Length: 495
Image (tube, rainbow, N blue to C red; front, side):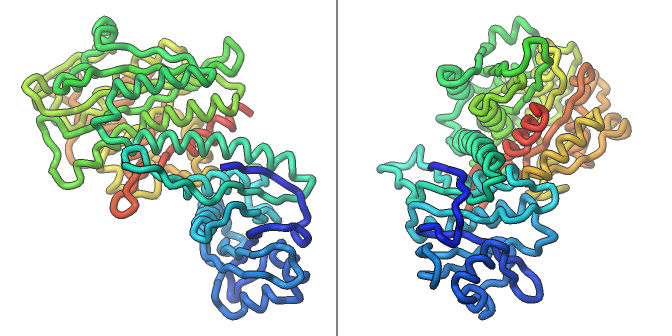
């Protein structure tokens, strides 16, 4: 798929399909580009809209064929909701709808003119980026483990049309959007692979392969390496599996040599059966998605490297399986973490925090500016926030504000939850320094409080993506979140 930015006059543009905006209100209202075309077409567009076939709600569409006075073969009207309420989420919904209509119509190219005004904080660069990412995501198809040849997308070219003065910003938005979309696709592909293919060793091979094409330096720690580092917590999880654990480290150095890096840590549990505290059979297949935090680290590193951002980023993915076996962790077992803290394992299905805590101790060696971890950590976060927002926890208000703002701007939202000492006390153990669960109440919060015990030497944030990393039902599959949030965060930090 090729994305470009152009400044052609839309009223004279030869196009297979020209996309323009309609806004919602008491009556649907044409956007500026649509209104310009309507004047060329002697009011034909406004007359069509007045019939009520499109109301301007976000993502609604109406195709017009052979419009009079216009050189485009088709005009696709797409709803953007109320003008005053257009944000990243609305724009992405509209762009995804455009991609689906274009694909259903077997169009090879489209020209998108949705950028005739600013919407709040959405400047041209950000709007273009959202459109590119959303179109690309809508066209994604998983084919890796299907027999037969993959059916290619009909849509091959999408051009964004802007005023000449906005062309440089639009081209920058295209470049950022393409890189982010590439990272999202990688994260989705890794997440969608089955657990018998995407093992810790597979992820390690993937990380090594990335350094062949990108300015990324990869190191993979084996179980023997981790034993020397005394990562007893991480290694305890892999004991029940025949697949050896891996600690994958990817370094991108685009900033100055002395600049402290941003460290991204992602939970890479390639399959989670719960261990001895085994999960119910229903929907257990979805536990292949338990490595989506790690997949998002892969995606973000790839996107950062493709963009050549002037920033240092380190990605760390602790990877294991969690299966029941004679050697597996048992409820009541006590393990010793790399930090020297002892942990009583009251539930073996709370394993993500056991592999993350050693990774969080390990990353202190990079002397990070900030550390952000991503994990499909708790069902409790899904109960709290549903599938719309990731849970955000942090020991630093400024970092939390940066991530919340990045999520809003990226249309990949997060919501901050507390980590008061009251919650940490729920992790008290009679037999170890702390327990790995804090009871049923506030499960997402106590899980974050557990991780915080291993992240006290630096500014740290935790994203619980259990509700946002994948979809269930008929649209089952990885979403690639929170790669868009991470990229907005890193682009902002890179200036």
